[in-house]
Length: 313
Image (cartoon, rainbow, N blue to C red; front, side, top):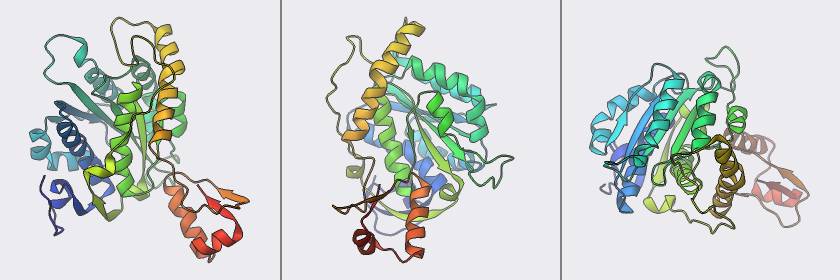
């Protein structure tokens, strides 16, 4: 992709390095393109598959994907909206089985599932089975949950982390549009490394916003940590397999591998870190921006926070 200095309507998808303007939903459209380009640079011949069911705050995701069809087709990324969320997740699960049969034309297929929080509720059975079955080494899966904490367009206030925790799927919570890209790309790396599904929350306030952000392939580099223990047959999907073997592999090896990867790659940050702190605030996702705003409203900048002994994680 070319380097471009001017910001225009095409730059949000076409510029490899530089500054681009895009919305939260458009960041989710750029994400599979970015994943494919990074795979190409690494010498991998991958393809992508996206399926799910629309619902605010991801109500416009499939429309944005349709608008980018020419670009997605050129990168072997297939978009297939589903009749419901369960079928979408089942189709994404199927993409991880490509390498289990002869005649595969790609090194792997990465998958994205999308749906609103009520869709996460109803898809729990598929999430659990697909997650325990695992993913392919050069595929990987990211489930994107549209959460509506304020019930802006929902009959109930919606939060998906608990459902993903129940399915034993690691959850990433971006606090900004640039983190939608960074966490999304790296979540695929976690998925491939540990052999499990990953998830990301997409809250209404973030998806409905826009921002100018800096992009560069170097921003998405990761390191693979050494693991204390790996089963002889690896962590990834295979045939045949049994439920108890899946459970032992997932809990004994995959989840520790995912945690080791996250720790080695600096997902978490401590932006205010006085050496003698005696107060601490922990915030994830959009709540981090809310905390910074609250501190600003109280007249507590970074210098004042350090004077007070306040640490922000």
